[in-house]
Length: 377
Ligand SMILES: Cc1ncc(COP(=O)(O)O)c(C=O)c1O
Image (cartoon, rainbow, N blue to C red; front, side):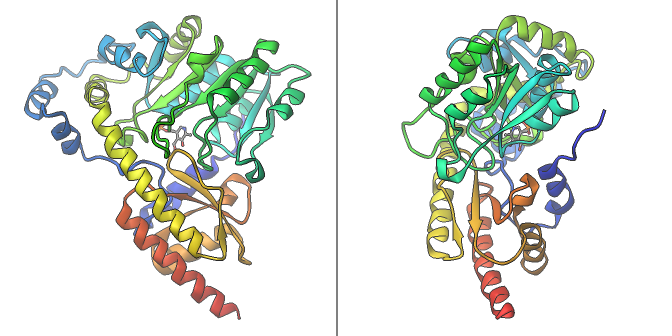
């Protein structure tokens, strides 16, 4: 079985360790473990419990407490309709491994997290791309989806909020897509790794798992909870799907381990405090990035509405990977090129990984562009 190299992850693996100003990372300013424990106001008690944990596989499905807390993030879930995984990426993989057969027809938005297209393709599905375009605010065109589905579709892959563009589908659009899927008996996988990170106060959108009877939503501790190092995520969906996925999970995961389980419980119990911190960070950071884009004539964007990334366009005569490598070499500022998505003259900014790094990074991009343009003239 062949699978395409994962463009974004390979770029990050190759270059991220050299970053001085990392403005490509997609997590909201990752927490130190002590910060999580202090925020919980139960530090000593949690540490004693962790030290007293016997290093067995733990609860194979994930503890009832953890699954109950995850279920609480949705309108209509119970612990039997969620499944704990080692990260949102593992949840996406297992979902596709459970739902996709060779010869199936999959329609996926693009650009997005590459798992959603490359894994179904590797499993022998035909994958058609529903292109997200800046002229349509990086949102899917549902008329186009309807047309593409005319000859049948087995799975529709979405990502809400979207990485890299920061676009956000609202309830109406999600319901429209669910309606199209329903006509064809198709599943919908919605990667919701950035769910809740919305810039405009008071705006919230539902989860696909709550809207559609064949909807599966995947979630993660990495971005929204600033705990990528925990390697914890999950999927939420109909019970029969969760049971089938659980049967397959024996082959990949067995369990996610009791330490991760216990710390994920701490994070979810303190969800409101973490969300308050993180919403403040993303809103302040996107405002900084917005001021910068407005002040730089060579750059333009569709302002993101949610998440931690923006897909910024530029009008300079340099391919995006050369742009990023040269910038990193001469300034230490790390960005991700649009070429990782097969889209040129774009850069993915991850703006929420620390405001000081963001300010320094943006300043250095400005300086570098001026110098580089000077050199060319
Ligand atoms: C849209 C999306 N889904 C899933 C993931 C994987 O996250 P994790 O495996 O850390 O939960 C990422 C990471 O960048 C992402 O951007």
